[in-house]
Length: 448
Image 1 (tube, rainbow, N blue to C red):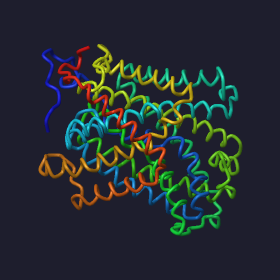
Image 2: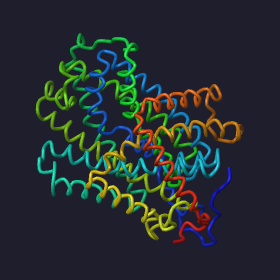
Image 3: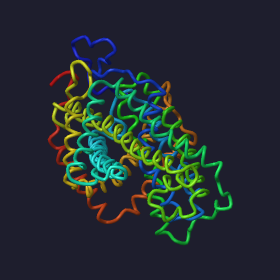
């Protein structure tokens, strides 16, 4: 596999990869924690009610089926990531498989997703906090939560990837504990007669399509794990392991949460805060508060990953000459992409406080599906081009899994509204303009 950047002429500091200037400090189980942190967000606190409303007694089957479907996409990312130890994720895979233009467009769309998601999640955090601190709902209180949370996450990501990885794992544990409490305690209070296992409403394609999008994006976020591969100790082995472990654990957790919610909350489909209401019913108001706080921590944790991985896309694109070279600048002590981290935070604050992020956030649907298709296609190309590469993951059935992932993504793309598709096309067109002004790639990662 060709290396995009030559080694700099100076000697790199201890622990720094000379080909990127980044510190390789994140181990396998930390990557697993970061991967789970990126997927298990606020959606799990709303998913049980929405799934029950759309699918009724088929929601359990649907959540399990969605986990299996997303596994197809996860395996494509696992296969592609096993070829690389560089940062960039889907951008890198598409670039190496299909050339710089396809790679840039993939990275561009993914970058748009990261910035708008950071804005949306910080706004969502303020809304979650307002449930027990009403002043956070608007005005100065709302701005304080948005700016304060993004400022904290920015600082944690600036001071070094070791600190960031530890903070990410801590947030993962903090967000999982309330959910594990909900499952373990709730199972003892189950009304098993309320758990109805019905068939999917195949005769209502509109409702089924809406539910499919809901379920798929409850599992979204896994695609960001490979973005920081340049700071992982052994990414070619550890990223595939982390992705597979994550999807297995998250699918099991989602199914169990849905099971307990159905069996403990008779009004599940009509609830706006289903887990908190169910917990209050079987364990009191203290448990409801625990789940409410858990939702806020969950949003904060997911946004932490967005602030961690988003700047790595900027860094990779700047290193290859597509974005201003200042975005590739690394802090001389912490070896983190300091300018990219600060820029993403500033853009997220601006979008969150003005509210303009709402329309841009709709792009995340199209952008993610674009990256999914690009990565699945790249998985086929890379497996054919390098069939005997040592250590590379080989998927069973050859191209069957990537082809199934492509069909799944295109089917979901077809269910998007014309307005969303038009916005996606506009974003791609803007990306093509940016691509036209590409400069020569940077050679020295420490260069300004």
